[in-house]
Image 1 (tube, helix red, strand yellow):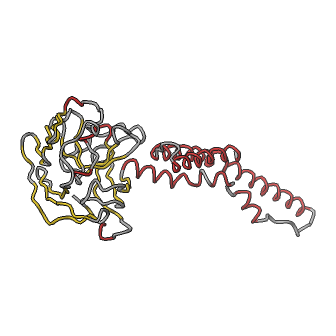
Image 2 (cartoon, one colour; image 1 turned 45 degrees about the vertical axis):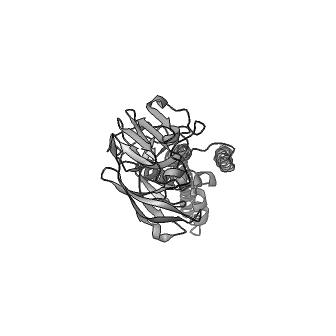
Image 3 (tube, helix red, strand yellow; image 1 turned 60 degrees about the vertical axis):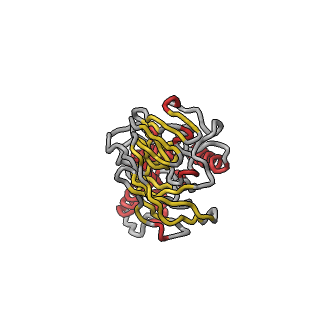
Length: 323
């Protein structure tokens, strides 16, 4: 068992190393699921086989010593040996290969359940959601608001509350589902979303945005125009970059399912959102790779609703809820 466990742990370490080096495309949910299953099997084996076996061995030593001392006492010998407490403890102690598997199972199980069904932490990798979320923000994502889903395969178990316009949502990036993306829900199933000349319209109704003082982008060391947008009752802030055009070139537009639902022009894009899908946009409107480029997010790709910044090591004032 020690050799087998060494091989299993080496396989996990090798996968993590290959993932870190970029040799393979990692899947943390799958890795955590496999770790839970493997350590769970060891925990069951420890609880129902290995631990009882060690206890029986210790009890056999105790019984044998007791019988020997009883025979000696019958012969009038009272100075007899006693059980070596430390030796008995060593006999009952878990070997290293159980300590590193069965011993870790409760912790791994709690992490797996919390991450899969309640809250999952994410780190914001880019500035596409500025000014709402900044690079380096560590956020929490609610995994049950939109309905509970099975880990790894993401199959929905409960309906939950449907996503609403204005929600900040984490989802599996449609062109590459192993990656998680975060954007704002702009278009719901059946909506017609138009983004022309940097003005957003939903179902023919212009979405109001009021200018506020310019935003200073500390990463790029420049000012950007900032607006307060009212996304049908949900207010949030967004950025526009005058140096970027509203329309997309053919080279920028990916091939995606339901591509025929979108019409592109030099002014921007108009899309009809299919049933069971969502149109997503970043708050940093001119610096966001979103649904304008790669299409719609199917319901099966939803991960959860982002709602809280729990840490930013460069700016502790960032901690708190956001819109």
